[in-house]
Length: 132
Image 1: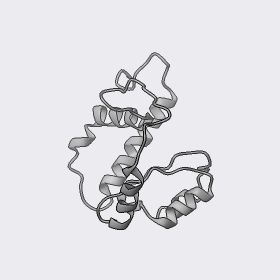
Image 2: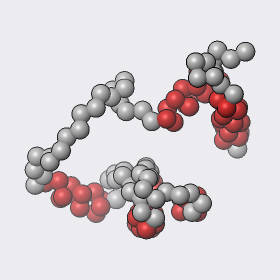
Image 3: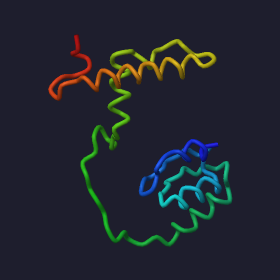
């Protein structure tokens, strides 16, 4: 399912994340074959894999290296959070009532397209919300 989407992307050296639904051997093999890495989520719907991972951590020693970086709001936020913040703030997307068919996907794409156009003309000291 995800492999055709990744086929046109240069993922070499990147970290590809997925939720438990996409934690599949075929996808993991593809990602490693493309010289990328994957931190997948494993839940109890894959009991054998979950037990195998738990077994690896049973005799865990102290880490060799610990990186302490100050998180933002209790978590580290990637660039997608800033885009989501802009869309939610300007379009109130989280309260959108568009819920059926392809409506939610289409309106989200249009909103992101509009933000992309606005950002391309944005001055460094200017915010999207402050645009005329």
